[in-house]
Length: 174
Image (cartoon, rainbow, N blue to C red; front, top):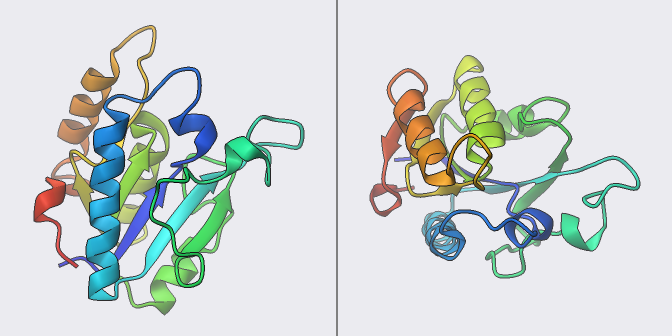
């Protein structure tokens, strides 16, 4: 049983940019399923938005910075916050919010696998949280070196055990 859900960087400029994330529609459906499950259980839901500097395509308030419109966000009760680094903890009050909500087990999902998902999983564990990583709940784009599918498989394998409990989204409970 997990205590909270963290969705990372599911923003218009990343989700619907020129380079499309791997299996983006399936991942979006998976995230919305996790959101519905967390909401039904009364678990807090946190949404991180990567925020670029002024003048960048994802500067605060810009159209590309917004969370993807098909993501099931309820701004009246969910927790939205901005970050400027791959870690959702650095320069934010996420750790304080999780501790105030007595969260011990955190489900982490969203984008991008090799940057913000990886970093946030590792930092969360260093801070004493237990992390659940749905292997089918995060995505990224192809790179010149590796296809997105290989990046996702590699991170699922690398993070499992030492950093996260790897599972499939269908098995995540709140």
